[in-house]
Length: 221
Image 1 (cartoon, rainbow, N blue to C red):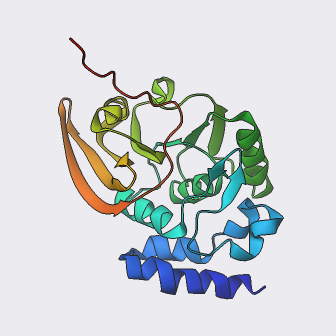
Image 2: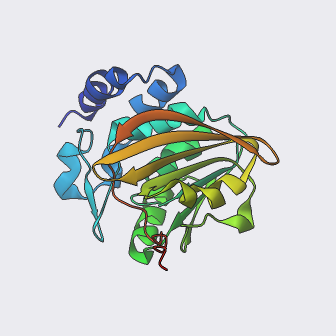
């Protein structure tokens, strides 16, 4: 399998058509070893436009969603980043490469996936990312505030974003997908002041829900 050609096809057939034009993001994806973060049985499809299973009932986000998230967050080398849902560790790798003078804290609720991601990141000698085992459905306040937060699963309602929004530094950005299938929306939230946030709709999609998010209680009389 020609991995270099597979990466090029991914960029030209999936990433660019989805309006990802940021040169830094495209350059990063051109050298991103996505195939190293999937199980051998799925390696030939590592760069395909699908949600690749990674075990524990979970899957990787499709490449175009990862790329849009990176572009929207507009990461600087010194940004302090929180990732909710480590999964395979591939998006963690992308984030770590983007903030070379800072650190990525990634939270994974499933110990087996967390340990597997740690091993994958260690193989590439990533020293500016740490994977923590825990429930990140309400963020990870012990490490904040963060310049950027990316949530790898969907939340069912806007109220579930509040804890993430509060953990942003002023000027910080949050990428999150809100809604229930078949209607979900990717949002970019920016914290503009102590008590001020703005939200921008990016695109519609459908991704699996984030573990640990409780549905609001129904009002009864």
